[in-house]
Image (cartoon, rainbow, N blue to C red; front, top):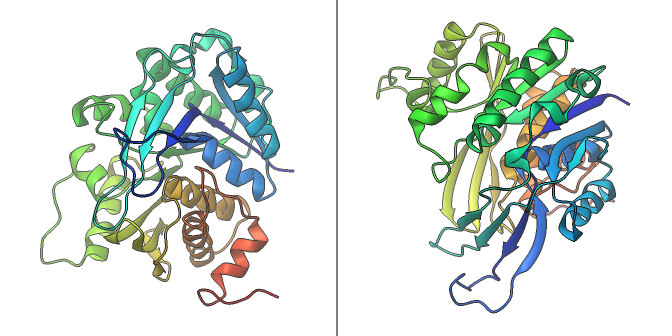
Length: 337
């Protein structure tokens, strides 16, 4: 099987029930997830040999994380044990016009204290098809920013394709801090997940003419990003129309070889859980690129994978590549026989 490596923090997620506020609820449901872990789980479901690199405490929660990963087919050979705590986040589930809200409790987590000395990057990345990480990791500590840059450089040295998701989170750091941390990594990136706001506020690209359509604007931003970083071969993102917390429209965008490809628009009218939708999309793009699908097939598959993720609880996708392909080619709600 083809080897994929992801690096990032996995956390305990505690969620309210629908219609409950975090300040009022008496019970919370538990899941485990995090951007790079979610991508790893999805890619494992798609049939790849996935290794997740992280650090968790050597206690019952750390063991639960390991069990979660192993149960989803993700290798834990490079899951370092140590530190004081597992990062946690609380999800107040949205409904109707009220959006979901996330409250982080991840400061001083085991992962935030992971150091370069605890990993053998050459052994980890050797023979990998893709190395994936996100900007969230860079936000967590100066040490992780150093580790991330070294990992990207080592991947390129070993001929491994690199994937970087900007994944900007305003609750973790400022745009200025994010830009300063991300820019040194971008010369080593082959695949990027970024959109219009990333181009404007993190990369400082001049805003597009307002007379352009949103598709034309995105093409403009991708062309400008590629001028700055000609090494970036592929850029992908989604257009999301939020009608309510449980009713969204989703369309995928995939820019390669100077051309923008778009998926059909999925109308997700009964969202079960939106968390991890972007990670499912990223995993779909990575799958399509590794399997050398045509660009229109890549974006069709990736957007379908993201739409499916919205229909299950938890952070990670739970569908095989075959199921995603079938869904991408069927009408909404059609019975698969």
